[in-house]
Image 1 (cartoon, helix red, strand yellow):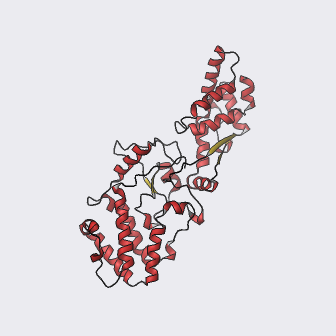
Image 2 (cartoon, rainbow, N blue to C red):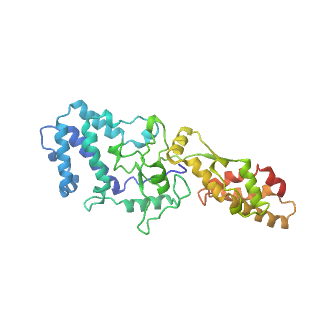
Image 3 (cartoon, helix red, strand yellow):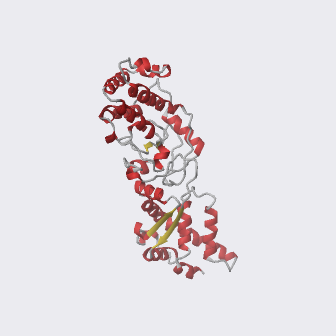
Length: 351
């Protein structure tokens, strides 16, 4: 992740997760010969009584749970709490997987909680609204671009459009977190649908960046350019050959290195979203245009000051980009310009 998201912890959108917790921990995991609905808290009666299918599913699963042992019921309750501690799971705490739980969890509970997110949240009797919550997140964070990749523009919500929520821990493996908005992260369609899909960030016990954590994410991005690509830049910038007539940049020609004290999380981020390759591709797309801009600025300054050199031009723009790294892919332009400072062929021409 390039940056974290400040959540809105008291939003009504979290109400349905409280209902899920009550149903699992206070009804199903306390299943006995007593009537199920007599245990239902008054605050949840309106929702449950409003939808016959919901009440029927709750009662059906309650009956299945009556046949489970106290040990099995305790395992389900513990799994609910453990698999909803999203931040700790991202930090390496082991989850409880479906194959370690009674079959009723995967057979009956999982489909119901997926339905909670896909259908129940949209119903009139349920507090919380996906678009309104997205607008609240946008207002609190002002994320103009995707917080994961940095270059896809985010909808503001004003046109009744929003980015999709990604189940960061996939609901196929962690159904108890299906409606937990600490696990639902707004991502651009390229990060969500094209790249991550149903991948599991914590697969195999690996660590992952938690998108809603309070501490910032500190990364250092550096770029290395191949000699072939430098030659193409030289032809375009120095010999004034049109970009379309040069060799198109390849991902392998622009090596992106991302370093952090949380390197394991960086590797997970890269695996989920192909971040390095996408950063390389994006760098290649702006590289010719950006260096042409540098050359125009260099010539303009050189006319005014004969001692002005190309390194000063590059440093000028690096300093200009630093205060706003999230703007216009500046977080990638800075390492690219630092790499350009090492291109001797360009530096020798311009001095």
